[in-house]
Length: 263
Ligand SMILES: Nc1ncnc2c1ncn2[C@@H]1O[C@H](COP(=O)(O)OP(=O)(O)O)[C@@H](O)[C@H]1O
Ligand SMILES: [Mg+2]
Image (cartoon, rainbow, N blue to C red; front, top):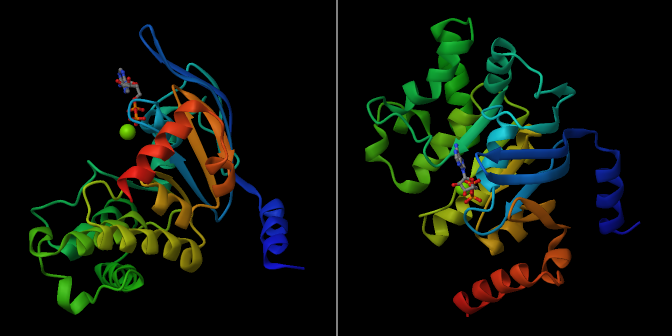
């Protein structure tokens, strides 16, 4: 068996963590999601590509339990989010990790308190246990607690802040991590580090990740599955080759622009 067939066999065996069926969402007259179908195996990385205004963030917010669809099913870890009531949804949101651009660190709290924050909110454990958990999470992302604990976000580099954001996102040991353009505005080296962190969460913690990206090189590097969204529909899905060989004119144009920029 070659490595390639082994991976395919493994993916076929992995249970689905996320199943979305015929998801539709409009805001007023504008239909933003036009029937999305999605299957994401547990422990894999799914990258969503596409231009701006195509519905990527709206799709991710549905997976995060932050928006309700007009119709369709969203099953995550065996539970349908669509009929879920507020209290149940709050529980659900707590179980997933989010790395959204706007969800930055709390500037007025030091690094230790930033990572401890979700634990203090949701876990009934002693401060001593919290300390052990925070330090464990920081170390997972190659941060030295003795060095960073009492620093403030503004005292760290962009790359280190991303590490802390990741440590906080996994504070409650989620099965699922959602990232909305985690590398926008970062330099190439920091972008590379974020990619490593996403892969690290997968290999060390078995976390399933859904990542919105505009960076094709990074997407190809980290994804087990890629999707390309155009005007609220998935126009192509699969591996790198499926995207590269996609005849859809918009996908073609998107790839051309990227090639030109990277020459
Ligand atoms: N809460 C909202 N109310 C009204 N329109 C929205 C809302 N959120 C998103 N939209 C619209 O939906 C479309 C898709 O948005 P979005 O998913 O954020 O795009 P992107 O692919 O860039 O992430 C955009 O036209 C946006 O203006
Ligand atoms: Mg967006």
